[in-house]
Image (cartoon, rainbow, N blue to C red; front, side, top):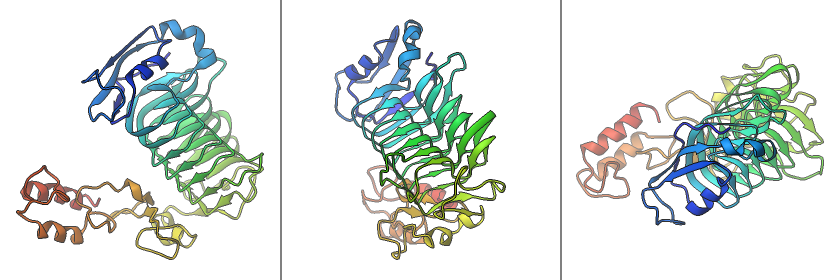
Length: 381
């Protein structure tokens, strides 16, 4: 059963006929598109999958699953957002149930739920249920709940790197649960974070703030590096502030940090130790030196590199964010948010036409732009 509350897909490069083909096993599908003649080009309007009835698909749900707002993806998803409440049995994702194509700059929100009425109940993620291709610059705030192999971003990640991504939704279930990924197979997780709580119910095991189960049994050199977790983690066995259970991953961790204030009684890894998995208090994790001293590349410093991957929130106390998150109206200089130096840029163009910094529309820089600028400045963005 797939239950959706008016899911919305915006800015997605999509072939309508292909999309409907993946929903062919549903008894009724209605796709409402503003311009139905547009097939493959980027469309700024909104696609709404308004009704989806899987009454006729019950017989195949146990075998195939693959339920998300896009049930299966084999191409590339870019610049898209999914919002809805999704439920099913296996391979359940807030955006994609089963993914074999690269995903970048995509996000999801809502809820993802494994239904309790099946013997096969596993692989659910806030963005993707099972992933087999690279995910970059993407995130999820979806709440994920149910049973086995569940993560705030990806339920089961298989030979596929996750780079500069994050998840903030809570995860709850029974086994192999992670704030970012439930089960990570031979895959890299680089410059990522998870902030949701990860809660094991009953005799839950293999639970971690970032990853539930990490398997490098084939000896790949893909690393878990420069990533952190802050949420409260709980369970009965193999529970860690960063990772629940590590299998043959010696040497594959680098500069990872977990929150000891939220999890004072836990180790970093539920079944092992690694010097590259380090604890920090919540207060220290709001300070840049806790990360730059461990070779994290932050904006406005060059000792650890010049890619400027991370930054601290501007005019606010908080945990590090990824630099690509900073699409903030009024932040033209790029110095930790909307600040006085950006105000000087606004002043230089006052009452003139400057499309590069205009915030309110294609006209002169005036009080409408100042209002937008001031809102972001006063909010500490």
